[in-house]
Image (cartoon, rainbow, N blue to C red; front, side, top):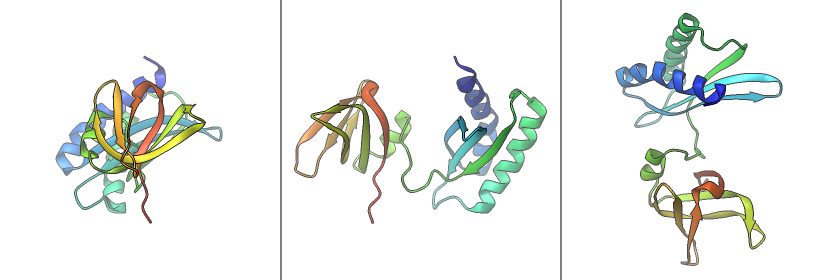
Length: 155
């Protein structure tokens, strides 16, 4: 397990009781370096959507716990936010919730010179995702080949 994965897992464990108490869902935790700074991000959601006040409550409580546990030696910026409209789907619970929804898939390697696909998520398992495209064709993608999956933005 990498340090990044360890920090994310420990943070998820700290957040779980807060999420249960507030009736929120923990969508994801990520520890990433961007533009020379480390960020610890928690994405939360609830029925009807997350507000700025909800994020503030979680941020304050999590910040206190992080100060107490002090398991991340690097300087980092803590962010708590909604996953947004084009949320990434990473875990089985995300895929289950998104069955029948329009998604975008980006692959690591192109298939017939194409890396980006869009369609309705019709099924998934540990090994693959199945997408029904607008023309009615069904495509199967190995999860190991997928760089990113997110809900499609429809404007």
